Image (cartoon, rainbow, N blue to C red; front, side):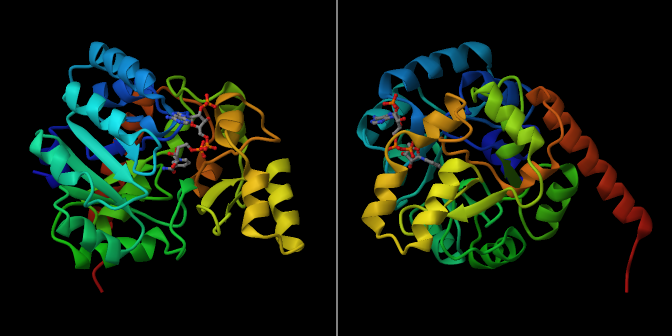
Length: 316
Ligand code: NDP
């Protein structure tokens, strides 16, 4: 049996990324009901909101689901308490040291995955006792590694470094890409951007429409001095570029970013002044689709491509 399916008790090794402002209970429960692992994005939820979202998610699915928790979240103790009280089956931690919370969560019977962008951090995560790592390449939307390692290079590097299951992320939104990730050594995939363009995602409709319209080259990774982030080009992005042109200081960049930019863009639909975090794969997303249809389409294409590869039987 596939190691990711066995670890989390799911049908397909498709983990939905817990994206801030986009991943509420409707998306998480829909993905879990479709056979993947749905994830609530707790980074943009106040503690009482996470509590409410967990109640709704548990009412909407009896399948396993998880919570994504950025470790730099300001009220992390409260989120941890809520997660333990709700007996959340899986937690995906990111942006921080996996040593801090892994054993506390695991002692409560919670499976822990940590997100990494290098083999070095994958090894550290394994040493910290996590059950699996998400290895996220340069193509991914939102927060990202500074080294710009692409998914194509990152997955084999991480695979060689650790024995625990590896979940590939960054640039994956189709069954074809899932086959490629598995060929590189992944045991499963984490998919974010493709699930933004679904009716169940909590993102603003204008942001969803912008994602569907996105073309090749519309996203760039920037703000490495703060937290590197991949986003769609817009007025806010141009403001950041102008700041780089005049050699702006880190403090000036911080000021331009301000607070709540991601909410403004992705949740409130301000396409010009907000931060629009999405992956390079947005160029391949051509329509809105229910989350279950996304999962089905990816699995159907995955099986078809596998069959084609077997049939062609290239051996050199
Ligand atoms: P900002 O500091 O710009 O804004 C904080 C936002 O989070 C506000 O919109 C606020 O809502 C909301 N929020 C939710 N809970 C709290 C809380 N306990 N205290 C303060 N604000 C809270 O941060 P960002 O929007 O850039 O990022 C928010 C979180 O998401 C961070 O933890 C960050 O690490 C994570 N993140 C993760 C990404 C990823 O790729 N994994 C990408 C981007 C961010 P309100 O405006 O209603 O007060």
